[in-house]
View 1 (cartoon, rainbow, N blue to C red):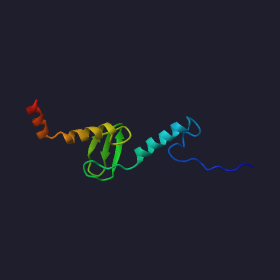
View 2 (cartoon, rainbow, N blue to C red):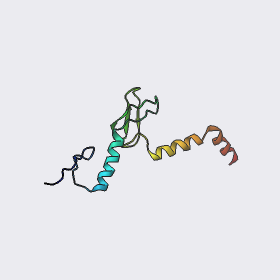
View 3 (cartoon, rainbow, N blue to C red):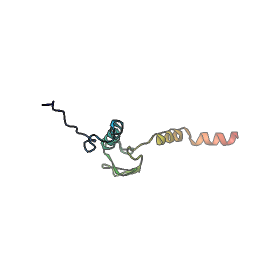
View 4 (cartoon, rainbow, N blue to C red):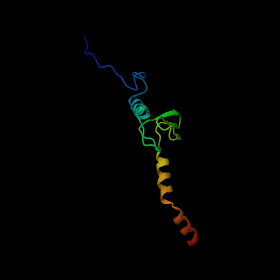
Length: 99
């Protein structure tokens, strides 16, 4: 008799031995990131859940905001926030006067 193997559980339990290991690993990272609790940008509570693709909802304060498909924030959004923080009204007026 052969050795008993452990039963696969987790996000890929329905995929079984199909699609290859790389695709299954990528699927695990996406689904586990989707299901974990995320921090609300308004109240700071870790109670944000996804309503639909790109729409996120805080169950504590009721805030609804847009984000990425699988995470509330995207890399492009972080870059935009950083850029917006760097541009204050004083720096914009100084640049216009200098030109």
